[in-house]
Each structure stands twice: as structure tokens, then as C-alpha cells.
Image 1 (cartoon, protein in one colour):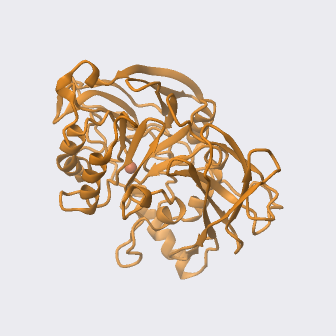
Image 2: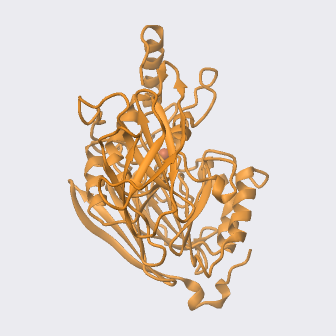
Image 3: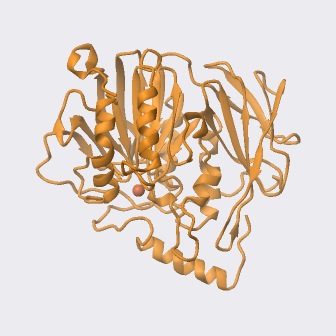
Length: 437
Ligand SMILES: [Fe+2]
């Protein structure tokens, strides 16, 4: 994780200044209220040695396995030892190690190891690397309802992020879903390491399932042409298991919910690999096994905030894919990007539609850019609740027909439950809403 000096540092500074001015992360044309500074989280203890695991996070692989991801300063074995009692590691698995370079930065050793089979709703204790003294634990998701998701986008790493994470930690969730914009490193790669350390206390205990936003692209024409380099290296998701050829879009089942992660910043037109994969994935859903379908995107398809209006990732992606989601009777679409909270009614093609998904913007995790506080006036009828505050959401699917959604405002660091609604699957009361794939 070394950064080389001289001309490289100068170049990095210039590019960072451009990024902060909006060249790479989306142009801001609105005034945002006071923000908080980026936290830089260093190693937890000075005495951690070069092979101590850091930035540990976990993600589900299939229905009974878990990927353990962590970083070390220097090369070591990608071994995870694990078991159901503290300090007793009956099982062991080996994984793979990779690294990447970006401008003048060289990453640490990034380890990915899949462990299992694991029992549902069970606590496992683990350590990364055979000689590590750091013990972690996680709980696997349940195999059946109820299942509780924490949902938060545009997280970043500020004081707001820190208190939002504290609120999420207190929520007793089973899995975190993140609709893009993670670290706000914005080319400054050590901030990816800082973000990994900031989220480790949560992300090492529950699976964090993520998709990418514009802040993950980090492509610099002619200088670094490969997009998503850091994101793909650090946040490897289980794309192969769902037949996807890209880490940028994938799906998985958890309890009775089919979760689809889409990529707003990769091709989405009807001839694209992502479109064809989505079409096939929706067709394969077994609704006896997973009655609920949830989709995550970054750039919202419905948005009555003045921020991020007219972007092609919203307009063109919606035009290409909304029909697919509608005919498959997707229940909820979570988006980020706009730094505020907004909940729409069930909607399709711009109008209220009892068979359409509920769209929710939850891009209010707490990043350094602050809030998007201006709304289009008057409020469109399809927008039910909108507020420019930081916070996070909780989506608790209690059975095959009912789920409780709550939005929790981060009110000067205190958590305040602000929006709450029960979702009832329409097919129960409306035979017209049968699946059409
Ligand atoms: Fe964004």
C-alpha cells in the first residue's frame, strides 16, 4: 500500500483536485448544506504486523457459503480457519490472493477465501491467516423468513458515516445491501484502505452485498483506462454463481428473497451482456422459493430531487430495463446517488401502477459531499415521502406476502424512525399482477 513520490504525487494531486471539482464523480449544480470532513482510519493498532488481517469484510456465496475478504501489507497464505466456538477452529479453507496498481499506488495483498457449507442463522468464529491473533465472528443469514436487511447508499467516510454505521450496528440486521458509492476515495487509493478499516467492525460480522456507483469508476482517460479497478479488486461479489460474467451485476437468494444487483455505469442497452443476463435471471426466479424480488441500482429511475436530473444512467437505463422489472413483478427498487431519502408509490412508466415496484432512493449514508436539499415543486403525486437528511433504511421481510420498510433519519447523530410502511405483495389482491416473463 505504498505511494511513490515525485512527479507521481504531483499528478495525483492534480487529478484529485479535478475529481473534487466534479470531473469524475458527477457535476454538482446545487448547494449542499454543511458537510463533515473525510475521516482517515489508520491501522487499529501500531503493533499490527505486516501479515495481520485488516479491512475484513464478508459476502454470501450461494446459500450456504461465505467469502471472507481481507488485506495484508505483505504476502501471506489466504487461509481462513473457522468453527462454531471461540478459539476452536475445526475447519479451514484456502483462497486466492491478488493486488492492483493505480497511478503511484500499489495495493496490499487482497485475499478472498470462500468457506462452508455453513448452517443458517448461526454464529461462526474465524481468523484470517494461520498465525493471526485477531479473531472475528459473523452470523449467517436465516434460511427462511423473517429476514432483515439494512439498506444504505453513498456511504463515504465522514462523521455522518460513523454515526449512521452505529445506528445500523444497533439494528440487529442479517445482511447489508449497498446501492453504490462506497468509499469516495475518488482516485486517492489510500482512502479505500481507510474505508475498509472504518466498515470492518460491521462488515466482518454480517454479509455486505454491494453494487457500484459513479465514485467507483475511477477511470482516467489515457492514464488509467480500466474502470472499477479498486472496486473489483476489493469488493468481489458472487457473480459467477448467478451466471453473470461480470462483478458489476449479479444476483443471489437469501431466505425467501431474490436480490438483483445491477450496474448503472456499465452497458445496459437491450444488446448488452447485462440486459441479456437480467432477462435470463428474472426468468429463472422460483417464486415458491423466493416470493420477493428486490433490485438495487445506483442512479435512481424515479427522483423528484433537483440533484442528478437528466442523467443517462437514470433515463436510458430506465427506458431499457423498466419493462423487464415490471413484467417480472419486482417488488422494490433501491437506488442511491441522490444524497437524500425519497419513497415513491408502486410505479411504472411514470405513473402509479399497482403491479409496479416501489422505488426508494436511499443515497443518504453520510458522505463528504453533504445533502441534496432542493426538490422539484410541486411534489409529483407518485412521490410519497421525501426528505434531505442522512440516515439508513431497514427492510424486514416477515413472510411471503408482507414486509416492513422503515427509514431511520440520522438526526444530529441520533437515530430517529421517520418513515414506516408495510409492503403487501399485490398478487394476493390483484390477479392482474401475475408474473409475465
Ligand atoms: Fe453517485
